[in-house]
Image 1 (tube, rainbow, N blue to C red):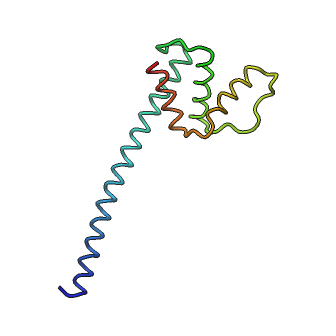
Image 2: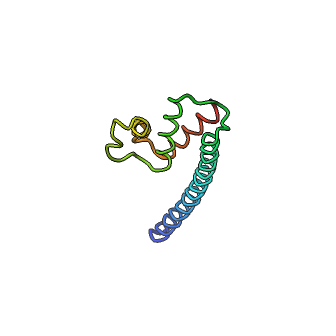
Image 3: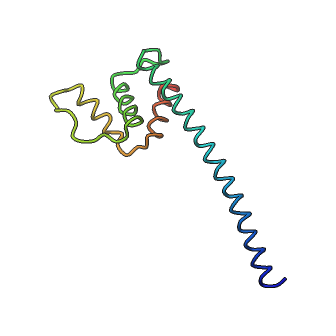
Length: 120
């Protein structure tokens, strides 16, 4: 095989591998999107079940605060600023629960929320 034919063969092989990788990447992206969509739907269902009191478990005040923090993290991302004045006890407690989730991704927060509500 001449050098030119070898180069063409190698080039064609690279393209074939790239398209195979591209196909796999698209497939994985599609699966991730579907899983994320299912997680979001489950998360929304769990939010409603806690909000309207038909969750399978009866959360304590501490658990409610933790769930609040997770829900805010999942919906809005990291808490910003100093939060409410410490003399405003309930709003401050809620803000601190959210602040405790700082650094967690929104997907991680959703997953933790779902795990607590569905499997506790």
